[in-house]
Length: 194
Image 1 (cartoon, rainbow, N blue to C red):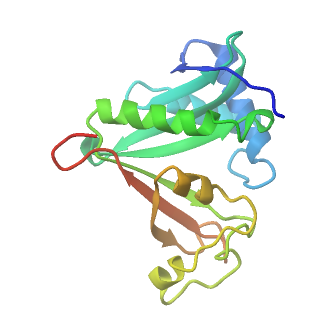
Image 2: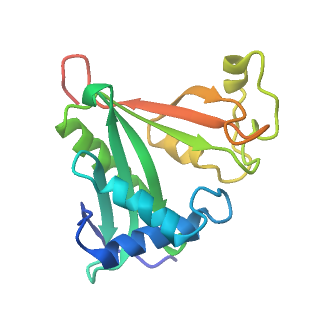
């Protein structure tokens, strides 16, 4: 039986250097095995600082005693009609306990409050954890998207469960056979409701 954890979600404080450093450390720690995007704390901290800018959204899941369990960010596009979810990270010790789902739901609500209609994201396959990894996706890229399967805990399966649909592929985004998988979710109905 797993220990139940409690958390609260709040805006990342751009003035709290300790929290910003822990956010950055999570990027380095949790993506080390699957992506070279954040090879060191300095690179990750630069991304964190960008995420906490006022025009962006950066939300953090904290334990009652202030430990950072995970965090999520988003930036506006298309005049705020669309928001890009980037990044989402949860401490390995707290994954599969609802923290990521709660962060995604919270972020979607914040984007709706700011007028967002759609949330999108790119989830790279840099290490062959999907059926598209290592494959030549040309010339029928969209047909290949229909073949997408999870081979070993790729994040696209998590996002699919959260209501996101695959909306495209960028073949070879990270080198041959390492595509970026684009996913999106509608945040409100045509009448403006949720």
